[in-house]
Length: 371
Ligand SMILES: C[S@@+](CC[C@H](N)C(=O)[O-])C[C@H]1O[C@@H](n2cnc3c(N)ncnc32)[C@H](O)[C@@H]1O
Image (tube, rainbow, N blue to C red; front, side, top):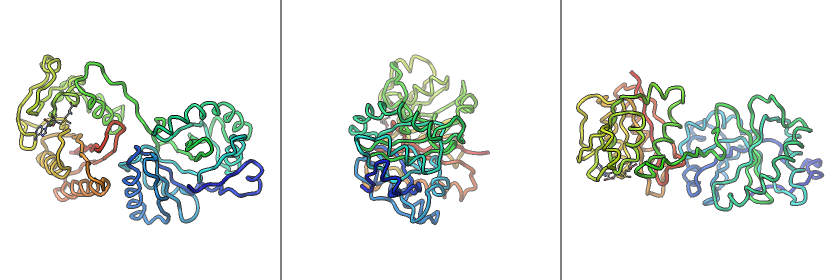
């Protein structure tokens, strides 16, 4: 790993690159190659000069280094919400190697000399077992670091909402990054933690709940996830996603050959149809289509596309299962196809896709049709 061993004195000697020339992105461990391929593609399309630093397998993050200068432009131009595999997006300095006797000195010097200041400091670690073992260390440094930064002016009450991120890679290595309001995850580690409802029929329930948090602004929930709406859940059994729809007081067509949870059926809000989700047609226009069927991603895209073209629903959330190696290539191919087909038919829609925290080998797509 590229880095510099410094202590406060060495920093005075100017051996650290004080330009934040890296773009640091967090991801689920095991998806570094996918995120690396995604940002390489996006950066090339944006005409940015720089390169992905070869990702460490299972590290839980990916770095991109500019050919020259700060990484602010690429970070701003390729927004976090437009990226599939990234959980967090930061402008960062190169990783800093620390002296165990004086970890704070090097960090404070780098921040002070960079000229940047911040309103808050977050300590984070990769979402790996090794990362978890660093949490205690980072917590113990939190208070003394904040007071040292305040003294030097690096931490202040008003600093444009900027947040300083200390991404701990080991006991002797940290990558210092920064984030800006409006283009970052507001959750530590970029992970939205949700409590599993004890009466939900399956753990998958959290995938749909997280998708709503990610794709639908909170102030639109009442209107877009409203009482009395009509929905279909394709591949519904045992009912984790249907549970979320029912909780929002919707009426649900649950399409699956498998058995549905008895408690859900007792609500009277669910009609269970043992039919093929790829061919079932709704009796009238519905508000929501959700689909968690395990099948080839392109087959799911074809089916959802038919629903959207026929305007059988207003919004859709569906998963694309990705058992293959080149996951970014497959997702990109599917999204390009969907966007192309909708565009060719002049159907105005917003399409977004995210590898959610509760997703495993799959991504979640959201489509909102505009009238
Ligand atoms: C991953 S599970 C769905 C879990 C569900 N979302 C939950 O939260 O409980 C996938 C389901 O898709 C169903 N399925 C597979 N192919 C289907 C098809 N062609 N039509 C309808 N359901 C299908 C399976 O029977 C299975 O119950």
